Image (tube, rainbow, N blue to C red; front, side, top):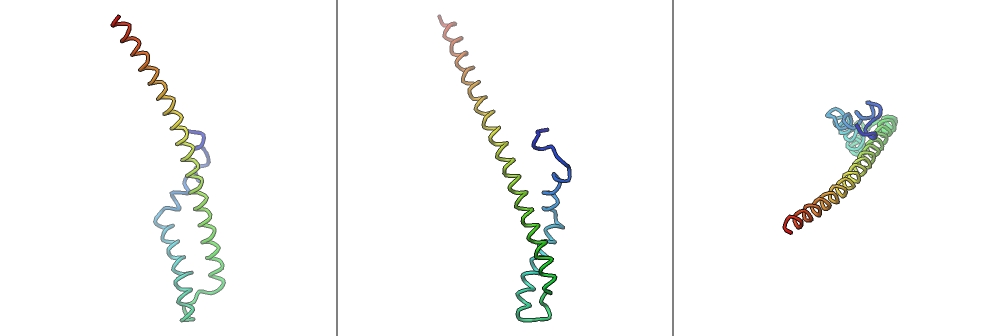
Length: 113
Protein backbone atom coordinates (compact mmCIF):
# COMPACT_ATOMS: atom_id res chain seq x y z
CA UNK A 1 0.00 0.00 0.00
CA UNK A 2 1.38 3.46 -0.90
CA UNK A 3 2.03 5.92 1.90
CA UNK A 4 -0.49 8.32 0.36
CA UNK A 5 -3.25 5.75 0.61
CA UNK A 6 -2.66 5.18 4.33
CA UNK A 7 -4.81 7.04 6.79
CA UNK A 8 -7.98 6.71 8.76
CA UNK A 9 -10.52 4.52 7.03
CA UNK A 10 -13.32 7.02 7.60
CA UNK A 11 -11.39 9.60 5.53
CA UNK A 12 -11.03 7.10 2.70
CA UNK A 13 -14.77 6.40 2.86
CA UNK A 14 -15.85 10.06 2.53
CA UNK A 15 -15.76 10.26 -1.30
CA UNK A 16 -17.90 7.14 -1.55
CA UNK A 17 -20.38 8.47 0.99
CA UNK A 18 -20.69 11.82 -0.80
CA UNK A 19 -21.27 10.02 -4.10
CA UNK A 20 -23.90 7.67 -2.65
CA UNK A 21 -27.52 7.78 -3.76
CA UNK A 22 -28.73 9.08 -0.38
CA UNK A 23 -26.24 11.97 -0.42
CA UNK A 24 -27.24 12.93 -3.93
CA UNK A 25 -30.90 12.79 -2.87
CA UNK A 26 -30.14 15.08 0.10
CA UNK A 27 -28.32 17.57 -2.13
CA UNK A 28 -31.19 17.60 -4.64
CA UNK A 29 -33.67 18.03 -1.79
CA UNK A 30 -31.67 20.96 -0.40
CA UNK A 31 -31.50 22.54 -3.84
CA UNK A 32 -35.25 22.19 -4.37
CA UNK A 33 -36.10 23.40 -0.87
CA UNK A 34 -33.73 26.37 -0.82
CA UNK A 35 -33.79 27.51 -4.44
CA UNK A 36 -37.03 26.34 -6.04
CA UNK A 37 -39.25 26.94 -2.99
CA UNK A 38 -37.36 30.17 -2.36
CA UNK A 39 -38.25 31.38 -5.85
CA UNK A 40 -41.84 30.15 -5.55
CA UNK A 41 -42.00 31.80 -2.12
CA UNK A 42 -41.45 35.16 -3.77
CA UNK A 43 -44.89 34.77 -5.33
CA UNK A 44 -46.68 32.43 -2.89
CA UNK A 45 -45.71 33.37 0.65
CA UNK A 46 -47.14 30.19 2.23
CA UNK A 47 -44.56 28.06 0.38
CA UNK A 48 -41.57 30.21 1.28
CA UNK A 49 -39.00 28.48 3.53
CA UNK A 50 -38.43 30.20 6.84
CA UNK A 51 -35.37 32.37 7.22
CA UNK A 52 -34.01 30.02 9.90
CA UNK A 53 -34.39 27.00 7.63
CA UNK A 54 -32.67 28.82 4.78
CA UNK A 55 -29.82 29.83 7.06
CA UNK A 56 -29.24 26.39 8.57
CA UNK A 57 -29.73 24.36 5.38
CA UNK A 58 -27.86 26.94 3.31
CA UNK A 59 -24.86 26.67 5.64
CA UNK A 60 -25.09 22.87 5.41
CA UNK A 61 -25.06 23.16 1.62
CA UNK A 62 -22.04 25.49 1.69
CA UNK A 63 -20.13 23.16 4.00
CA UNK A 64 -20.84 20.09 1.89
CA UNK A 65 -19.87 21.98 -1.26
CA UNK A 66 -16.59 23.03 0.31
CA UNK A 67 -16.00 19.48 1.53
CA UNK A 68 -16.69 18.09 -1.94
CA UNK A 69 -14.32 20.61 -3.51
CA UNK A 70 -11.62 19.72 -0.99
CA UNK A 71 -12.04 16.01 -1.68
CA UNK A 72 -11.88 16.61 -5.42
CA UNK A 73 -8.75 18.74 -5.02
CA UNK A 74 -7.14 16.12 -2.81
CA UNK A 75 -8.01 13.35 -5.24
CA UNK A 76 -6.63 15.28 -8.20
CA UNK A 77 -3.43 16.09 -6.28
CA UNK A 78 -3.01 12.43 -5.43
CA UNK A 79 -3.73 11.47 -9.04
CA UNK A 80 -1.16 13.98 -10.29
CA UNK A 81 1.44 12.55 -7.93
CA UNK A 82 0.72 9.03 -9.17
CA UNK A 83 0.96 10.17 -12.80
CA UNK A 84 4.34 11.79 -12.13
CA UNK A 85 5.61 8.56 -10.55
CA UNK A 86 4.31 6.62 -13.53
CA UNK A 87 6.06 8.96 -15.98
CA UNK A 88 9.30 8.62 -14.02
CA UNK A 89 9.04 4.81 -14.12
CA UNK A 90 8.23 4.99 -17.83
CA UNK A 91 11.33 7.07 -18.56
CA UNK A 92 13.42 4.66 -16.50
CA UNK A 93 12.02 1.68 -18.39
CA UNK A 94 12.54 3.45 -21.69
CA UNK A 95 16.23 4.07 -20.95
CA UNK A 96 16.67 0.44 -19.85
CA UNK A 97 15.11 -0.79 -23.09
CA UNK A 98 17.34 1.52 -25.14
CA UNK A 99 20.37 0.14 -23.28
CA UNK A 100 19.17 -3.39 -23.97
CA UNK A 101 18.78 -2.62 -27.68
CA UNK A 102 22.30 -1.21 -27.75
CA UNK A 103 23.68 -4.38 -26.13
CA UNK A 104 21.72 -6.61 -28.53
CA UNK A 105 23.04 -4.60 -31.51
CA UNK A 106 26.62 -4.97 -30.23
CA UNK A 107 26.12 -8.70 -29.79
CA UNK A 108 24.77 -8.96 -33.33
CA UNK A 109 27.76 -7.08 -34.73
CA UNK A 110 30.28 -9.26 -32.86
CA UNK A 111 28.63 -12.47 -34.08
CA UNK A 112 28.81 -11.27 -37.70
CA UNK A 113 32.57 -10.67 -37.40
